[in-house]
Length: 413
Ligand SMILES: [Zn+2]
Image: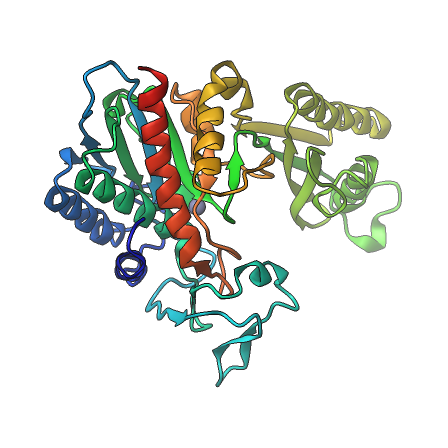
């Protein structure tokens, strides 16, 4: 079993480095400061004894652990991202360590009266007696995904220190800019050279995910005709009223706040408008590819219908696909999910297999030819001041990685 203090020390050394990404930047990495952690990781991988350690011009860090068995084993990979979300500050992260958690409120910040309470976040209760790392209430923690990085690093170190555990060649990759949806964009899948991989980027202990949304964005532009209100009779066309017709014609209950599990939705994310022009920003989500395509058609058909209703070309729609459900790429190689599930059971972790209501880097990687389910990293309440991670969950994740390595070597014997 891996050393708990070692995990804590490593994790703290990572979260103290600010690596916030920035969606308004065009470069990769999107922020210069992400190099700070990328370079540190490269140096640590080298010191640890990993092979083929590299960092490319976009800050993707890769390394290999050579096989220690004589027979052929498929190369597998583990992936995590080192950036944190632009949604919340990641500057001067000052973590607090709560040992032997008593199941009561955790005061994050006395001065500002910020409390992490199990009354509101009842997941906390499953970690009674464990060591919990929280924020000080002023920043996020960065367990998303520095917990994942910590776990991969610790697992590699463990395998190096325990050469009696058989494993094939293992590749690891740490990426920038996942939080702005670009973690996979410049990921060199060919150079990585793994047959399949796992992102260590899920939430609570046990999570195992190989299904995510199909995703598209739609921009609906409605044009009107602005005329002086005093002289507007039979002349003015108010684009905002047409936009309201459009909004109300989409199924009102197929929205994020009325759906769960594998139910898809249309989400009206933003409106800008005046008499002359109104723009609606939608996102479209559905796990089922056919339903997803049907939703996109529905938006286009509705635009056409409203145009004919008003007898003018007043609504245009631009739909752009964002990412797809990795299930169609993972299902043909279902053994990679089975390995993860078996590894969890061997590590005494109950697998929680459920569809993600979002996307992952693994989804994009799967479509780039690297099937890539997602495994828990252990944290909760990502992207805000209530983020926390139980150290025991990170320990379990390390064990799961080690078990996957060993199981894969065994299965191909
Ligand atoms: Zn993440």
